[in-house]
Image (cartoon, rainbow, N blue to C red):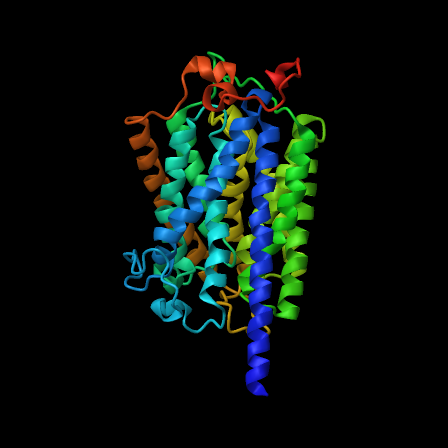
Length: 434
């Protein structure tokens, strides 16, 4: 009887992880809609193509190399891959031996995470990067850059041993993706016509607010899988708490962006509101299992405010041309999410063996200890992601080249890179459609 109950529990937990993984997989559609809507008509096919192909490349590279990098146990710093091509034996991965789930289920959930880290980069380098160069970078971020960073925390590597915690990837995924995107934007430079000679920015409008909004809602749905799946099993009370905190961060993130965009831009900007709710979701990933519902509302609201300020600051003062705001949403809010854990994490009331709990946050009876650990983690992850990404971007720039020719950029990447249009037969006017 006990054996039957154990087998039933494994079956339920496996189903839970697979369904959550499918929700994360569906986020690819959300990213495709969001990023395409933020870009101009002449680049819509290119954006859609990148969002489709990125999951092809990231899945294969994570299967061949990345999964082994993440769960290899030879070194706390960087372990050489021990099991290339995903050896399908649980005992081959020391860190996974005590998880009562099929190895294939664990791999599926992890591969959709790797795809997310790569997809983040796509929007920031939009409308001027060569399709082939982007796919080559996708291979490296999925096979080495993200897996090594994740091994430091999820794989119980050097940052985990110090005391850094990151429940679902504020640092491991979103900060890595956002910082890699920043490195790519610096290597690429801004789009043609984005800045005047005096460096004042020109607005380059996307072509579809409905697509942006649809993408935002799809990502919001997928985020429940993102956070809930990291329990690696169905734990009713904990999963309900995570769902509520995830939703709270999204809602107050949208409210924060609404308030700040209204103050700074004199109007409630829908694109900022969507990015605000996404910034709240990004911030939730670091600590949604460890904070109170009240704390989650505060974390989300601050993230939404930060998104608007960050996007405007990068555009107007640092001249960082990020068409979709990915660096601010994922990079900046990922960093905030990691810091928020050190501020808002509660003393654990019910310990679940599948979770690695942080110490109490500064606002919940703790001292600065956990906050210091989180600072160390942020510095390490940012340095790793930026240096490795920038080296790869520069290597691509001086070998095959990163940017399409200027005429192709002005005419649109759809015809130049793909030989087709997103909306053939339609004639459009206005800046947003050029």
